Image 1 (cartoon, rainbow over the protein chains, first blue to last red):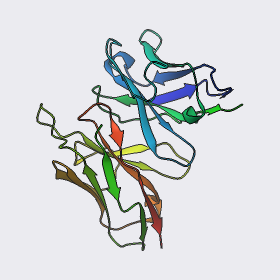
Image 2 (image 1 turned 90 degrees about the vertical axis):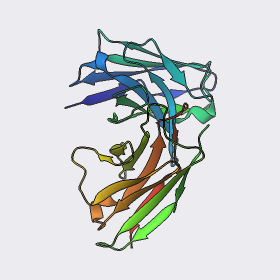
Image 3 (image 1 turned 120 degrees about the horizontal axis):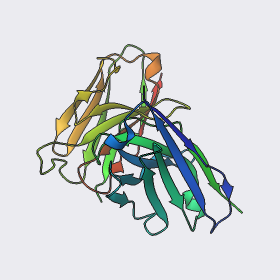
Length: 118
Length: 112
């Protein structure tokens, strides 16, 4: 059974940075593209970033491009989202999600809450 | 960016009755590889989203057959033949044909 466990969500001040991690189990992690999707409180789903199975290809939403970096360590079955220059609009639950191909999203983690506030 | 427009945004349904959610994209979702990357997700209250369908009409494992997905090009539909209490939640369409990936606004299904 696929299990995705996000961690690292925290309260951070505007302009600060945060590093989220997603630990995957139950799958051969290196075979799958991975994505980050966020959900602001009471709002809908917003795609943030995707990374190919090898890590060689990444895509970002315009709203985070230049501030967020997605990476992965296939030897540790871990996906990482480095978030810099955080703004109030980045407050959300961040979900880690697995996909077959780069444009797929199928299984989701339980999410980790990032709150940007002074 | 591709805009995904869902309707209705709120859907009150009587138990046992059918329900239908429409999703329209601002451009065709037919990829150059011939596939149409349109997914449907269900998010029950307090839970993470769960995929119901991929490539328009391919049902994910464990999804009851009272759910069906249909459509082509720019117009897609999620249909529930007989709504049950466990179907309460928010339903999202998502396109994966064009970057960036985009979601519809969500349709909240509730029991009347």
